[in-house]
Length: 382
Image (tube, rainbow, N blue to C red):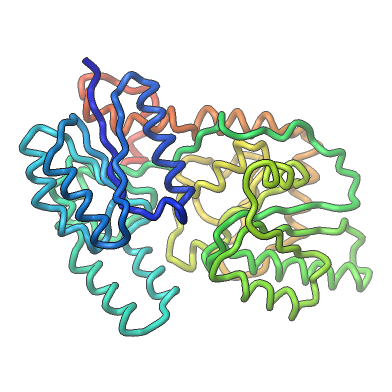
């Protein structure tokens, strides 16, 4: 009889489409390896959704429980997790963002000082003790020592996965002749995406081009998505007079988004994670871009990607404007060396696909087996 795995998450599935896709793809990958998998969604917001998870935990019939961390609601689940563990279930807690960065996000998005301070206090006082019951903690970036107390030896650093077979790979490489270069950034716009650095870089590049200091191509930046940062980015574009170079495409999915990817040359991933004091990460968008066959720009250290890969342009992890000239030099060399979208896709398939990320769960269920996809010891926090 196959072993049973249940993933529990209390999220708004209408708003957090990317998270839903990640959870579903993880469980599909485990199902493909012979496990009987189930997803239990908390359908209410806030503590009500967490209490729905609690009811599910009190009647477990599974071998492995994967719980998406509930932040400062986590203490509500401790008794139920203990009960599930006593019944023989292995417990994995999936922390999507290091808790210390959650504090920075709360502060950066505050609408009221009292509300932000209250949420920050609750988070600091709720963790890490409410995670001590777990057999394993999954992190996707470096955590502050405070939130590692009592859980360091059971914490594993893992890169996010992506369903590389669910995307359409760019079917050709445009014949770049130096006339126009299209950058694309797709995101729910927040300050940590750092798209303002690209806009400032384009403004400086255009000023030099208009002054005759160089004769490079027209560089265009397509911003796809919406979010709290959009109004600030639109104002910056107006202030710097680069409305011809920066286009806001709005929210796109499906064929419309695929067409934008197909018409783009380079994808822009996170350029502002340092604003959250996050230097190591594994954003899903970077994985999507590579699976599509696009070369990528980012400024953080990726858990899974060596910086020596030639289809990666590593920008400085600071607030300086993106150097468009340096980027162009890299891109022209990349083209001269025969870059093809299929190479970025194959890299994603071999190293970033969900199918190579399941070891973190399988190891708990089959500790006697050696999993070839387990990373080197240097990737393990504990």
